[in-house]
Image 1 (cartoon, one colour):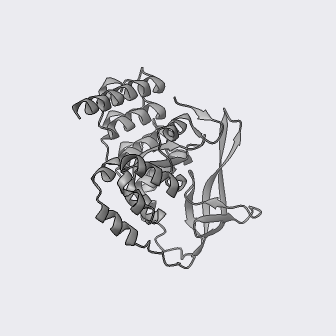
Image 2 (cartoon, helix red, strand yellow):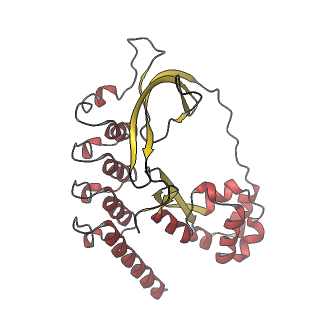
Image 3 (cartoon, one colour):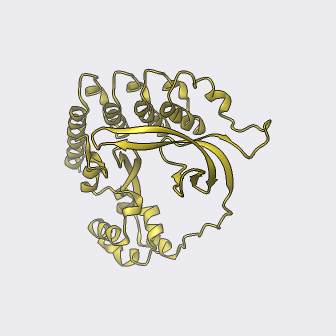
Length: 291
C-alpha cells in the first residue's frame, strides 16, 4: 500500500519490515543468528563466533529500497541470503569466524568554503513544502555549516544538496568536471530537477534519458535509480507514469517479473503493486511445487 505512516517511513517500508527486510544498520547479531538457526541450525554454534560486520557482509543481501520519510529519503533494505546459507559449509563459517574486520584508517577532515544549495522543509504532513536555500559556509567532512546557520548543519548527502561553487579556489581553476554539462540544463529545470541531473552525471549515467522538463524531480529520481541498478528503464521512463507507478514497475523489473501485465498508465500505483505481488507469490508457489 502506497502512502506514509506519519513522518517516519512509507507504508511499503513498513511492509518490508514485516517481510523480514531492514536497513543494514537495524540488523543485530541476535536477529541474524535466529535466521541462521531457522535455515541452518547446524551452523549456529560457529556463527556465534563470527563478528557482526562479517555476518552482515556474508549472510545478508540487498533486497529493495524504500522511501523512509515523506521527503523521499531512499533507504536500502537487506534480508537473509538464503541461497548462501543453504550452500554454506562448516569450514566456510570457521573461516568467517577467523576473519577480522579491517578498521578504516582515520582520514584528515578536509574543509572547503563553498556556496551551497539545500532544501528547508515546512508545511504540514499531508502538504510538505520545500524551500530552496542558497548560503555560503564551510563543508567539513560530510556536513555543510552555513555561515548564518546559527550552528545548524546540513548533510551533504541529503536530497537537494549540491555545491554551487567553491569559494576557496582560484578563479581559473576547473571547479567541476560536470559544470559545462550542467550548464546545458540550468535554464530549463528547477533546482530539484538539477539535483537529479547532477547525481546522474556523477554516477556516469546517460542523463539524457530523464533530463526532460516533462519529468518532475521524483520521476527523475526513479529513472536514475533504475539506471544505477542496470535496469532497462525504457518501459517506465515515460511522463504518463507518476513516481509511485515508476517505483512499482522498477521493482517488478528487478525481480524478473513480466511488468507489461501492469505497466499501464491507467493503473494506479496501489493496483500495480497488488498485481505485482500476486505474480510474485504465484511464481514462489510454482517454485515450491517443483521442489
